[in-house]
Length: 390
Image (cartoon, rainbow, N blue to C red):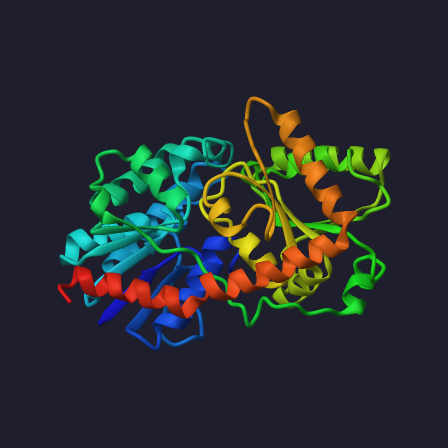
């Protein structure tokens, strides 16, 4: 069986959970199918990986140029996969490639839904009118796909709510996964000291991009209500826009003035360092306001770290409230209540490291048992075979 995996992100260019998903899935699929990966960016040296670049004439300083660039890459990808038996796309950046390739070559297109454009209106800040193009690309691909993989039951419900024309039988749930051999408890005192944290000090950590979806502004507001003797470590990825970067920077400065003990690390860190900082933390905080699965929670759990997270999307399918962490209700109409809940949950575990450690151990067991990649890859290949008639 020849499978073409279509994606924006692929090593070494990974900046989010969808990219991690594709990297891990590709690694598992290679022993199961004849795999070819099509991605964005510079040429890769890895066999069977083909990178595509946007049409240079589309480049401009307008925010919409990113969406036009994506569509040009979609055309290149679609034209490059005539020999594939299955096309499998990830995120709107590559969904249209799968849809057009499926139409052109008469092949089944499988779409993994990592997020949904109708539920991310703030993306208009980043893409401008390109948000309408990204929504068009996702909708066209979603309605035309032979099968849609939702990464959680919550995500499946969102898919069917946003696209009621879809036959529910075409939407399958295959959970996201985590490499529990890479994400495992690992401690290195030098890493903590390098980041300004004394080993043995209870601290909370956030890992995520600076985007409205990840709720970092809510965490910073909550931080002002947390005992200032506890460090809060922010591992912040790239901002979506200069505007949100400025907003978050201003909030961070307020936290520094009012409570201090805010450790800010910007940029994508080596995975080994992230694992070490997750492992040493007393609690990982996920204040997302939208999260179809919430892979970073599973990664923290695999590192045996307790989690405080918002009760949105697929997160309750990952974090078991009261056993592997604490879930906090999110209501966009009551942000202050959400922030108070985050602060209370984080401080509860910071003050009770025995309970936090117990939750972390249970989280590690759950990550290994439920979110291992071999099982997920087997289910994905079984779906491919169903679409090809066995």
